[in-house]
Length: 81
Image 1: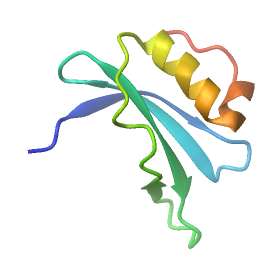
Image 2: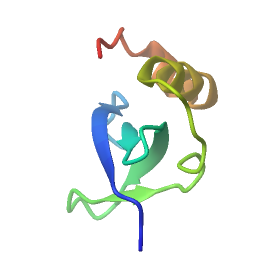
Image 3: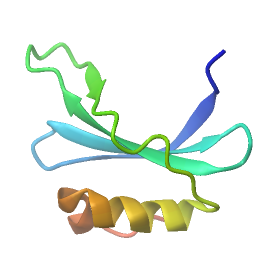
């Protein structure tokens, strides 16, 4: 059975072609994943499967790590939890 998580924040790049979701898992740990938009324009997102297995103890720590690993994300403004 897959673990359930709740998305806390979602950030899109300026072109709307990539996004990063910050989420919290049922066990209270945090994580993030990067997605790309489908090229056919139907509004679906495809997980790149790079980061969702990483685990962090807070949303702030998760966002800092995401900004270090996903280059375009570092240009997003501050987020308040």
